[in-house]
Image (tube, rainbow, N blue to C red):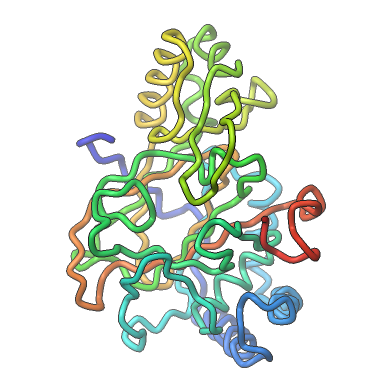
Length: 326
């Protein structure tokens, strides 16, 4: 991606919980963890989580509501000092397609706050449709451009190939890497747009690109799409610099200029245990620095959720009105 690391995200972005607020979140998470059937992917458990999310501390609900209204120029929300007992965690999972099925306090924390923002969803073809997924390094996949890798991960919109990609991606840190420095690049088209000439914006706004899905989705023909869409003054972005391909030379040049502009305005987010970040998947792209996994049970471990704002627009794609897109 780049050998020059971006500046860190400003410490003023987001909200740091007081110790009292942390205890209140912990009590809610413990109650949710104990709720029947204690299985995250069961609708009854998620229904309980949705109800309990209304009892989150007021400042969290206010911060999330404002972010939902307007994600700001960076498209990022960070909540700090959440109740993650880093010392009491089990070993970091190290198996492919790792997910959380049984309820735990960390999984309850990210579920509660994600449901305050919108509706938690998953994709049947991705990690078996689990609603809370693990982002962990997997032996043998170090060089993969995926959540299982530990090499530099290219800037991307999550599931850029998909017509119903997430509106937000939630990342809760349980453990950082051994050095405590593995980071997430975040960059926003709201910041980068001013660096793009009008003719480049015009090319990026035309259906002159295609994004390959991963093999697990078994998609048919890859449709053409623009990289920038919506209001030209405040567009959405749809790109994965590993999987999005230009369909002509002019489009290739525009894509290179876009990547350069996004890197120029990128920020570095180094999540530590108890910190939760949401990335607005409509206006921001994200990636990851490289790090060295040890596979000793203490490697980097994040929980991930996908959030939709409007459940109704995917009704026909969620069998039985569930939370998983077929």
